[in-house]
Image (tube, rainbow, N blue to C red; front, side, top):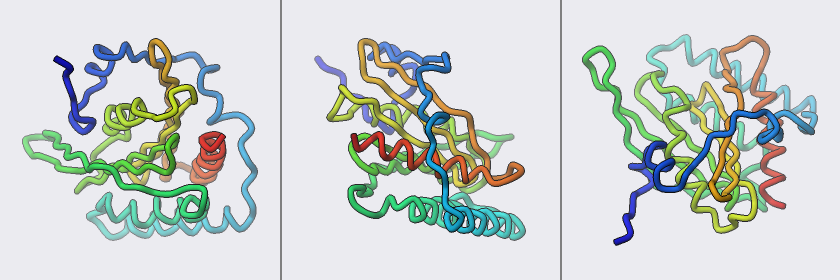
Length: 209
């Protein structure tokens, strides 16, 4: 009997057992988040500076809820990157409930998975506190990426908690292999949203090839 496991319930260990999923740690496998990144315009940088300023302002009014951050950061980021325009389309996949024990209390949250196109996924972690690493969404987004209708092409993804961002590349071979980028944090010096938008635009174009 074929065992069906819902993407919202999957773990990395199960993906490794079922599909032989492998993490590639060599730098050459996932160069797309570092090489040939498009230059941003001055207007794009100004808009990203406003997005970061809005995030910093939100931190002055605790408690800082991640779903609020996603509205203030992710939505305008996708707008600036023109991901609401053709040939992209956004489709909301099934939400995933997550709960973590933290010092005797339960922190509840949700992972929303967005499909920008058939080869580009975005996993959005929304929690009631700034409590989850972007790693919390890695299992689910890889499960969705493994279901690509075009297994001959690389699949790309991004996980964000609103304040942090990480990119993923998956090649569905025998066995399937994946790698992740560095984590970009909006709290860091400078404005790492510049990096995030440049990578988004680069991967978005590659996903359309």
